[in-house]
Each structure stands twice: as structure tokens, then as C-alpha cells.
Length: 371
Ligand code: COA
View (cartoon, rainbow, N blue to C red):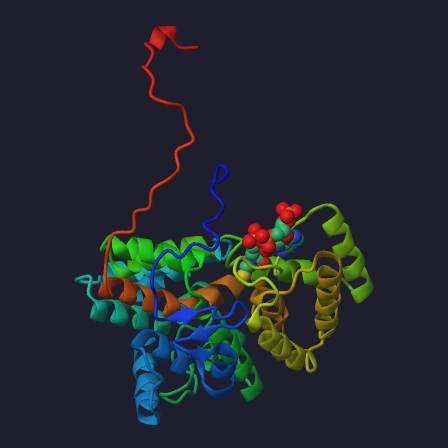
């Protein structure tokens, strides 16, 4: 291993029953293929599956939606602070702060599985509202909603101001499902390390958000968007991609640490993006994305990961680019929560060792003799 190690690629760091990449190019949540979950379920059903271990019955789903809807309200002291933060703040730092502020008002009382479930579901319901609150969007509850309105519909309505179409809600729901969980990725592993110290769920979540913030992890969709929207047509995009590859520039939204031939989530989100592009004034961004994909495949053998086409899909939904990664947080809270619960169910402090590469034992020289 070199200085930072080889990124622990291929090393199993623990057991899990939540999610697996299966045969190397399929993703399963508790045994269900993610593409099938997108076709047959809404995000709340998948959240229930991840956090509570089974798909809900129709009755359980109805109750769950009402329960989550009730949890959406945020304490006024949290709302006050978020509203006063300037819009220039880093959105992921705002997400961390939102979790911490909420933790201060309603701390977790003991590190049990039940408490982890309750805290995770509170954040699942509140995080989209807390983000909108900071953005100066509607944090109130005065628009028309029924007590079962999905998280995706509520978020879009707050953000855009108008009631979203069924197609828009389905598109965001699909993205939320695809982003919900991904085995021992960097942020989830971070959450488990923190949970294993018997710290609280909120501390594990803020640490996970910190890991997700990095452009090699959650920040890739924003970087992909900024690249895609900089091109006016497919030819320009293709030429620029060739040049970036020649310059050895990392192209965000391509490649993956686990998948080596394709990311199963990409085909799903690509179709979502294609459909949304048909009704959008800047629908040409889809063709631009395809041109970049083609060059990446031909020249580098790299395939798009979930972040690449989710960038244009989110853009077509009217979501500001700086909220792409916070939206990832809103979804991944379910996966993080499931892993915190699982960690607590059979906890052992996570404490690996390192292969030491530094100097051998030596005497500390006196200050006056040091060079
Ligand atoms: N653009 C250009 N080149 C890339 C690339 C990309 N997006 N992803 C990988 N490569 C290159 C690497 O630089 C490496 O080149 P080298 O052999 O000349 O050093 C080669 O392809 C092999 O990389 P690989 O081992 O497959 O990837 P990894 O496991 O080291 O890294 C990622 C995986 C995800 C960190 C990496 O693909 C990446 O940084 N992608 C962009 C960020 C991104 O989209 N992140 C979201 C992940 S869901």
C-alpha cells in the first residue's frame, strides 16, 4: 500500500443485511433489485424497507406517510437560526448544522436501535424542510396538502412554489430511491464508525454528511452539472471532454470504486432525465450529456455513475445546483439510519490497524541541537 493506502478496495470491513452490489453490476436493497423498487414503490416504501427491515403493507404505508408528514414540522428555534444564515453558506455545512441544531433541541437519550430509528425518521421528514427554510423557500405548511403527500411532492412544492406534476414527483421519487443506500460507501462507513463508539445518531449523521460533501463522493453531481451546463451543444461538449481527458482531468459523474462495467442506477436515472428533457426549454442538456458519455466510453472505457444523469434530471426539475448534494442527504439519511441501527444491533468498536511506514524508534533530540 502507498501513503494513504489503496482505499481499502475489495476489503470487506464488516457484515450487513441491508444492501449488496450483488454480482458486481446489480444493486439490491434487502434482496430487492433497486430498478424494480423504482418501478413498483415510492420513496417512503423504500425508506420503510431500509429502516424497518420489510416492505410496508398498504395499511402500514398509509400510516407511515401520515407519521412522516406529522414529523415535518421543525422547532421554531431551529427555523430561526436557519433562516438567518446567509444564502452563501456551504449547503452541506448547513445540513450538518441543521442536524446539530435539531439534536440540541431534541437530543437522543440513549444509543438504542429504537432511538436510532426514531431519530433517523425525524431527520428523514425534517431535512427537506430545514433545507428549504435556509433557502428562504416555504417552510410553512399553508399550501394544500393531504396528510399523506410524499416527501418528493412536498419538497418540490416548497422549492418551486407550484404544485408539481405527477411526472415530476415520480422523477424525484426515483432519484431518492436510487440515492438511498449503497453498502459500505465512504459516508455510510463513516456513520458506522461514529455509531460504533456509542455516540448518538445525530453525531453519526453529521459525520456522514461531512464525508458525503467531498466531490469524489456526493459532490460529483453538482460538479457534473456545472460542466454540462457550460456547453452550448454536443460537438462542443465532445471536444471539451477529449481535451479534459488529454489533460488527465477527472470527469465528475464517471467511474466507480465498486462497479467496473456499469452502474445499474445510471440506466434508470438516464431514462428519467430523458423523459424530463422532453418538456424542458434546456432539454438539449440531455443530448450534451450523451455526447460526453460517448467520449468517456470510447476513449476511457468509463461509464456514467448515478451522479451524471441525476445532474440533468435535477436541473430539469428546477432544483438549484447547490441543492443537489443536500438532496442526496435527504435520501441517504435512510441508508445511514439503517446502518446505525444495524451497527447498534451487534456493536463492536471499529478500530483497524495501520501498516506503519515511518521512522524506527529514536531519541528525542534536545531543542538546542535540532536542525
Ligand atoms: N474521469 C477520468 N478518469 C477517471 C475517472 C473519471 N471520472 N474515474 C477514474 N478515472 C481513471 C483514474 O484516474 C485511473 O487512471 P490511472 O490508472 O491513469 O490512474 C483509472 O481511471 C482507474 O480508476 P479506477 O480504479 O476505476 O477508479 P477508482 O476506484 O480509483 O476511483 C472514483 C473511483 C469514483 C473515485 C473515480 O472514478 C472518480 O473520481 N470519479 C469521479 C467522481 C465521481 O463521479 N464520484 C461519484 C462516485 S459515485
